[in-house]
Amino acid sequence: MTAPRLEVDLYKIEHNARVLVDRLAERGVSVTGVTKATLGSQEIVHAFLRAGVSGIGDSRIENIESMRRAGIPVTMTLIRSPMLSQAERVVAAADVSFNTELRVLNDLSIAAQKTGRTHGVVLMVELGDLREGIMADDLEDAVRHTLRLPNIAIKGIGTNLACRSGVSPDAGNMAELGSLATSIEATFGLTVEVVSGGNSANLNWALSDADTGRVNNLRLGESILLGREPLHRQPIEGLHTDAITLVAEVIESKIKPSLPWGTTAQTAFGEAGSRMDRGPVHQSILAVGIQDTDPDGLATPHGLRIVGASSDHLILESETGCLNVGSEVALQPDYSAVLRSMTSPFVVKSYTFSESLSESRSGCSQDVLRPVQQ
Ligand SMILES: *Cc1c(COP(=O)(O)O)cnc(C)c1O
Image (cartoon, rainbow, N blue to C red; front, side, top):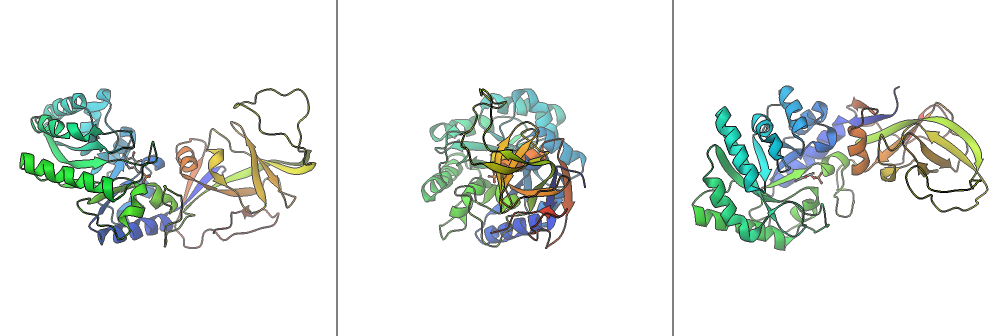
């Protein structure tokens, strides 16, 4: 088979999405499936839709455009503030966009008037993580301004936490978002339809006993794809954590000294690691590298350890001896590694639909060596 490849088990992704959609529905919260890590993969979008997500969100207009071309029949939201230079594309392809700048809202309005469309907007509020968002004190003015813009409809408000500073969603900041919605309704006599509380990092809060209050939507990517919540990267009960694996092929396998020789300086990607003579080691090279994935985000099968990486090589040490040239090793990617592999043209995407894809195997056969699930 072609390598490197991402093996994506659509059964597991659909299962993960459905469990989250169902659990959150009990709490009055809808799920926007976030596809940005998948390059708008049609297969994955359809798995999200079968699971009952209420809409699709992506941060890249290119992905939304390609899903539109593929005829995906669902509300598409651009979840990053539009570039001014892309206002027309955003109005043409996305039903809704997240916004924080009046200048951008003006241009979206002009673009929407030209095409006779109404573009929905969600105003994002800063609640402490210090990435995107209108300061709470400025929200009322932003709403007043937006209400005057032709062909723009305010759909709701939202916030995003835990992405830049690791600020956790909790009862306090979620209640603040809710009360902002209520006060906008009182001031302007409108209905704030959507109160979008955040991303996968909100799940610990949303699935606890906490009152979800006015929060009625979350935008979920990582938790569906990887079955983990991103605050502590713990598995979420009942979800698969091995829906996506990265398989790479061994191109060299030798016994080598563990200590380099000659005069050493910087490596291709910065400082060299620590040097310790551990005697001769079984070293193998996988034909995958920084161009294809994030080597720091890969978990290896038992007995294998990643000891180095460059553009096109991933260097492994094996406790168990032989890795045959031509054999394959399956690695468990984290979110950063999935993102990079999904968007690398060098990595083939291979979709399967099975409940028992990843049985762990061992030995030195031509079989794929896979990480043991815990
Ligand atoms: C990426 C992103 C999400 C989804 O985050 P996950 O951690 O993958 O669930 C939600 N909202 C915004 C604004 C994002 O940029």
